[in-house]
Length: 313
Image 1 (cartoon, rainbow, N blue to C red):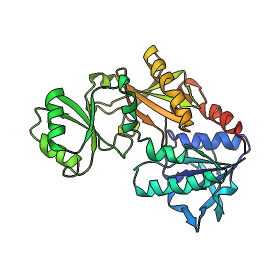
Image 2: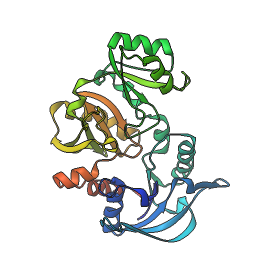
Image 3: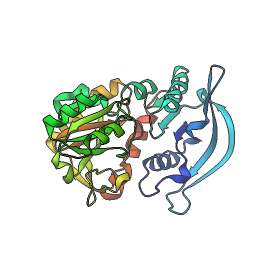
């Protein structure tokens, strides 16, 4: 199969943690032809979805993990599968890339995850479809609405809607002297909506990332525990990763979401659970494949490409 991957510069990845590298390595082991595309190199040529790409080969080598050659222009409709692994921020450049990939999809290319779903199924706001699993939540930029929510709940976590890796996530307390300044800064002077949720004290025990491939959750969760002085368990924020077998609550939430994810064309998802509450549904570029393989010997990249190879091309 001809498989293209859209990803941020591979030269800048964290070799020890990067899940996309693991996916590329698995595809290479299966003798698929690989095309490497950086986000800025997707474009429309008239109405033809196109890209500047390079052939890529990878190694699981910390000193030299990739090689690129033969840079050229292609029509994306000439590949079989596109893996959309571009990291947020989810801005207009990201949105336009989903339009380009959607046009390729209409030509018969399998795009993972589905471009229209990437646009409409925001990783934060999407949990509001599953309120039975969530702590109390609002999405607003209004000073009074946010302030009243904090007064009621005492401690909250505030999250930007378009970032990743814990960026911009802050903890607020009703007694904070700089509460209004913090709200104003986070909402860009009350013009940018944010998500505000009741703070879950069990976050210090770690948040649980559960990867779901074609509707099937992994048997183990990656538990990301905050470093000293932090409440964010994100690995990009210094969290420490361990693995634990799924508990009953994990299984129930994952099973409840799985069929919806399949219907939406989400073949790779990473759901986050804190203290038994669903906090995010990650579909842009879910990570933690490496942690499962390194700590449990679970190769979800192999499961994923079993699914890819079952697609009709």
